Length: 339
Image (cartoon, rainbow, N blue to C red):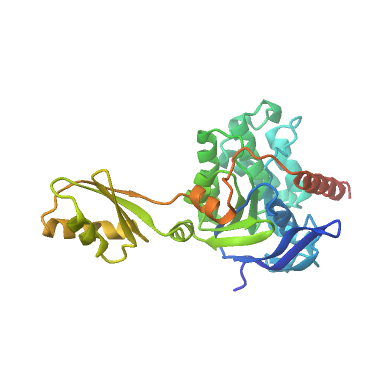
């Protein structure tokens, strides 16, 4: 079976010299929630806009839903859903009217439109506000409405571009709950960009990090963190310290290093959770009492810093290129609607 998204040596050059995307390659598995991370200006938005048929690629190849994006961009659009960072719902229409408009644009059969709209209103928990103007909605309600708009035509693949930016923790958690339900019920593949690394860590099956237009790392969140050299297991003995304890810990399987620090030992190992039972058993056999054993895993913040040399800022705004791409996308959408 062909992967829902396959990208091979994708290139985008602006003004004949600025390589915003420089030979990007990756694939997304069927039913996967794939995270795409990158600093502001790294080529993240440009890549997404090429994959969704809203920006012409300079070189390379990409297939989405089994279709060549270069030769069949309109057919690709019919098979994908897209939720933007910015609110795209019409504030002067009701929630129901926004969904009805989206259904018409995506050619949802008229006979099933009413039932589809009502189902989405209830599923997104905005049924009680269905006939209120969207400008009276909270941020979380708008996000849920826009998710409903993005899936009204039952797309095979859902693209989420910074979908929870600006929401409070409760709103973010609620949004992701609906996305996970969609994956479970429909087997939908989800491609997401986010500035919230806790979301990427907890929600994404795999991640790709892009920097300066190139993919610098891919893997599951755990695999990427493991590449930093391992977890830190902190051991606090109660009755013995010194070289003997350090040697005992250093000889355990998979241990990379042991560092004594203020009566404790910091043990680095690739998978700390698997080491702990062995470590506790070894200390018990050697008569070493333990006041505590704790595990700290490398965070995605550290992963990002390692691979890009920069911290991942949650408050980064759009670059000029990002804004130009978004404006072009909106103009294309209105052009199709008028036709």
